[in-house]
Image (tube, rainbow, N blue to C red):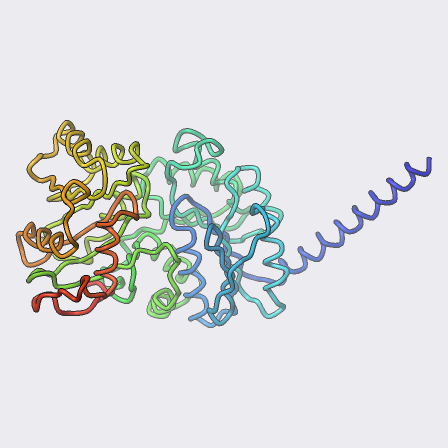
Length: 415
């Protein structure tokens, strides 16, 4: 009997503590008038940063939080604090962020969804963040083990963060997926808005020192329109926002008489994102530029090497492909089987043992016009790729071997 009473008292105490904490959290949420919950498969961290930067520039007292491996709290002044985790991340982290980093003066909260499981996405939106504006950046194939095998199933899973009687914004371009999101928003009495990349002019990209996607910028501009923030203020704020750690830094250098645009997409690891990223590079170079893809393959990732060989041959309309690292013969054979011209596949990897200087000379020789685009793909770490990363990062070649025509520093703004 004593044990039962003791256990009952503990239960009552815990319930009381939970009720107090729940009420305290609700009070914090209620005092923040603008709450934006950012979900989707690709671009969540970047969109979170863009929206927060825009709101800061417009005078809103804004707190933001990104998740993932580089989780950060972004404070009202734009400074950042890394989030330290003692164990595996859980959605309760969102509660702590709101508790520890918002104040009665906070006017806007922009927070990236950190849940993958649809049930936890629902809890995060409807019990924790309670966003009155939700963003679903896009629908892509990822996390199929939890979100569903088909794209429509994934769209339904992401829809768990659609607010009740709020606003859903998406930049998803495919009609059937966008239509599914709109249907799901109607079921909750939520307004729906499509952020069309066409509203973003090419010159808007000039102020970004990394590869910026018009889809992401369009989401920010649509929110700005809704809040009556002038477009120039919105763009200025987004351009000032610190890019995510994974952002692609686009650079330019003169390489043996040729202007070369360098885009290291090594961290982009799926078909759709690779296609979209290469397409997003078009405003950064002239229409006549020679486009060269680097297939950079690690010895311990044979399956990925062949996967990207298929993507390169079937989905990417590039003028040449250069192989780095391992599996050069296998990749070339696979691409030729898929119909890509074998003479346009150039080996510069482990089979050739070339210096960075020689690689740059040969790449410059492939460029038919005065400008070329060099796109790194598949993996980051090989000797050849690291040499190019070092060079396009603004450094001289080993032993300072730079020809006069290679003079000129890195330019990280688009043309």
